[in-house]
Length: 123
Image 1 (cartoon, rainbow, N blue to C red):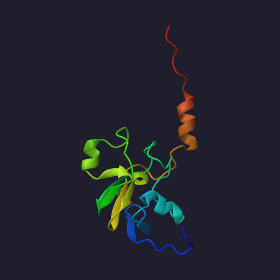
Image 2 (cartoon, helix red, strand yellow):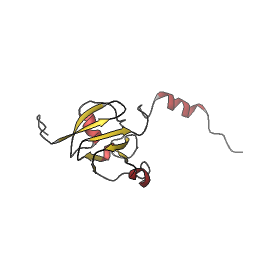
Image 3 (cartoon, rainbow, N blue to C red):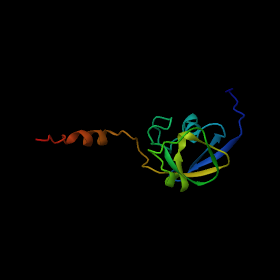
């Protein structure tokens, strides 16, 4: 990619943060956000394995850039507009909402709570 990125861009709007960023039609919604140093969609593994970037497309058209794990987006959810932002590219302007919480997936509080109570031993 050159210094002057001339790829056609589509506006991507994140409902929770009311932020809009331009995203090329051949890059994922998540790549477009990260490339510009923007925030709004949680970032995890960036290749569809963790499900952290799950979003719901409220308006606009997208195309798949790769398979979407059914462990993170069921067929029923997909029919309702849910997808992974790292696996789809915009084809028109897109309005979306983040499906999960707007926080880091591995926060200190969660790690502490996960280790606070030991697993009971069976006798």
